[in-house]
Length: 158
Ligand SMILES: CC(C)(COP(=O)(O)OP(=O)(O)OC[C@H]1O[C@@H](n2cnc3c(N)ncnc32)[C@H](O)[C@@H]1OP(=O)(O)O)[C@@H](O)C(=O)NCCC(=O)NCCS
Image (cartoon, rainbow, N blue to C red; front, side):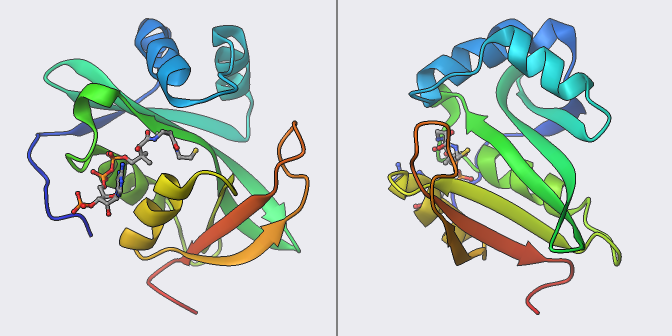
């Protein structure tokens, strides 16, 4: 795990009032930013949840995840996770990831995190937190890029 935790972080469910900050982070973080309407629509779905990381009363990061079934196994699949540039490498991404891992149960025991093949920083970061890439999914993203699928199981490795 990252050793540089230097800020107090709390996690809350994503709400409408967070959307402006989320949009700023989204645009600074991704080449294919989701529109605010897409984020709002997706987190209103029954199987999808958004959480935010709050630092000094500001939105410092967020994650959007889905409860899905893959190969007949119930999983948490991360759809989006990003940290504001002003707060990177302070452990905020790790706190968001820990929150998602804390939502695993004996029956929903696998976290699945597909990241772009080109996103080397995210891959290094996920390995830092003990996730392993155990699958490559061709053509996973809308523009045809492959996903490196990182996973972690409830209570550790299987
Ligand atoms: C990937 C991301 C979420 C990491 O969040 P973070 O809060 O900065 O990361 P943490 O502080 O939890 O972890 C830091 C560790 O991750 C790794 N890491 C993070 N950023 C890194 C970078 N730019 N270069 C190298 N290693 C990096 C290091 O191992 C680091 O540990 P160290 O500080 O002891 O060297 C953040 O960089 C981000 O939002 N990126 C853009 C969006 C994205 O790619 N999301 C993931 C795919 S959806």
